Image (cartoon, each protein chain N blue to C red):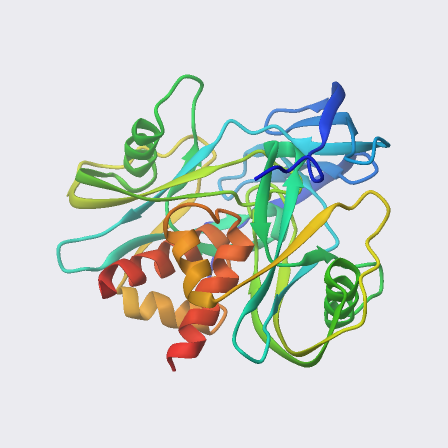
Length: 181
Length: 181
């Protein structure tokens, strides 16, 4: 498709904030009608999420306090890709660090863009099977509680609004669709 | 549940960037073990997404260039809540502004948190039925193309990776589950 009537072209780009976690950029862009506008966004290295599944079908989930929203959330394990790291290697590393499990079988599930309006983040989602417990080594400053749930129970939590983290919602709904085939 | 072993407490908070779109905060927090850490995040007023559905079941979608990822995305209409605005009013306003349609019947579908690691954003999702065309009035600088698709076709696009915007993926998957009941 010819998308010239939609495409914005970068004219100028600058870093406006470089913190420990966030890197904020502000670009000047040329709009399809030739006028200019400003775009502010987070430059992000990418992330992975893991849907860890035991042989009996139970899923491994985490409870973690998320400071921006000042609440505990139920989530699948996830983490940021280190520079030069393959997303699948990130997934294996984060699963091990956060839960103490390694997985022998990995299946790609989906690629997600969590916030296309103001972040470049993309999340690769993998299903992890044939789990083996090898012992967790949480990063300093990470406080995570592990829990397990059947897919049906986790979907009930989603339906009643107890799971609202989008990546986790999608992990559950995509797995449910995969199981129906 | 007693979550004292997970909860982080704010000690100090400062604004580190206030742009036209983004408001970035940096807080010092006390971790469950008493040590301190830094949290950087986007303070966001909240947003809505609309799943607009015609009487024949076809869905109204948009194609829009998203500069952070430098690509056109297929999305449901969405927008930021203005200060003091009810989310349902935002939904009606954004649907009208972006697509030119008003809806007579609104159904709450879900609440989503798109990026709990570094944004306070929450998205209220509504199903909009009994659409009536009243004419679009795009904001200056908004370039949006409208398209329609059956739920089945849109789910096929999702399966093959042509829809990766998480809010839109969730709108489709939640509607599909609702239809199955």
